[in-house]
Length: 286
Image 1 (tube, rainbow, N blue to C red):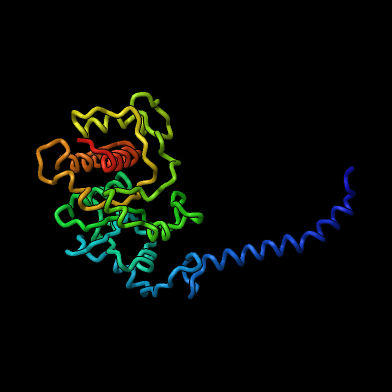
Image 2: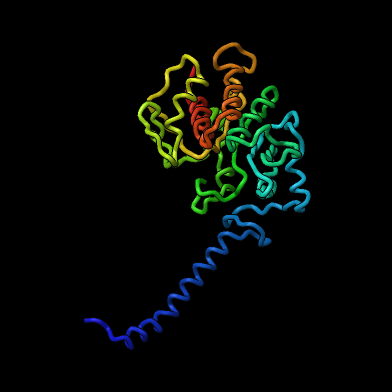
């Protein structure tokens, strides 16, 4: 039996205060959990409050020089654009040096020769330019604090970096900053069977790209790596591939990556290189 319209309105009026109170309580909870002492930015409750630099000083520090100073142990290698706000890195990670590349500003201290390949161009430029004096630990990350692929309930990049276990990174040599398997694992690319799709081209192009990067190495039947191009790596792991070498995976390895980005027509080349960079860091491709 259906309730009359008059009765339905009365029920709604009675329930409305409860609904409103629930929404208010949720809003207060969300605000408390996301607002640190001082009211600027957002941070989980219980986190330490860090004094921030003046805004002008923060932005000026982003472009401190083309190379990290000698003796730097930890470096955040950041792919950014002129519209990105990276001050959160200075606010919460004062103990990390920041190498912030601005890909769409040719006058920036840290930039790239060509704005292609998304973050891949930044990462490879950093490795090639700094190979002889790499820091002990490097985190290659995107510039924005909140991103859908960050492993955090609020998609916050701050706890993702704070929770990084340096001893584990030192032991493994490489860690993906995304632990969730979706997207990318257990198998994302099938070089021999993937068909052409208008929205995704990585599988179609991976085979050709892999053969160019690793001459004589058998192309894998399946490739899986968690997205989305944010990872930590150690100096010793990078230097497993010598800078000066005539081998297929020596200096030619890094330069072939760079060349592929520079001349490639595909917008999805960063996806191919992301898979090869990450997989070669994890697996010994000789």
